[in-house]
Image (cartoon, rainbow, N blue to C red; front, side, top):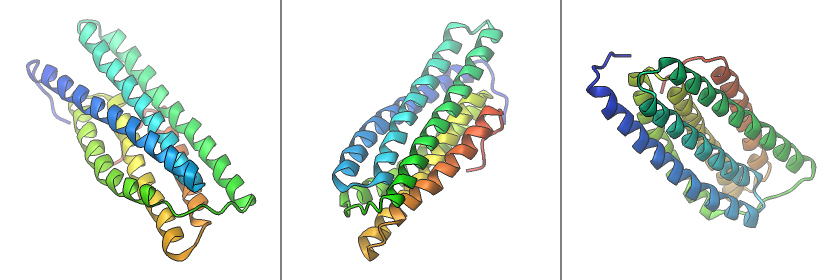
Length: 212
């Protein structure tokens, strides 16, 4: 981490806000497309991906709230710290809630032998999401480090987890499309849920973001 003079901090806050607004907008669109495509294809992983996108959008909204709180209370460090911890805990809770949902849905799909249809829309969405999530995670993390904000770094951790989720989704949808391995879809959901639980635990404990 690097120290920044007072002139740099407002610029960093503005950059952080821009990135979070991009994250918010992208995830709202991504979530809607994923859920609609997932429902039509009967893909639990794709629907779960969409649910996570909406959770990620609420996380971005909380971080926007956190950054704006610093702007309003620039001379009151205690209030900033309190807001920081609230934002961190919200991010952790959102991850845990999603993990529980996805684990249940994935396990149920395997037990019920629910075989999803091929979703070309889902595959294209996963490919685009890989690039967007990687860029957003690195950019948000850098701003969080420069601002010494654990909440913003935690948000970048969630975004980076979404990168791995996109990769798992792509593998699950791809294996089903190419080889008819229907179980790869709910299996991808189970793997992703395990990752969510780990990230939620680390964020709740206030650990620094993993390297990306």
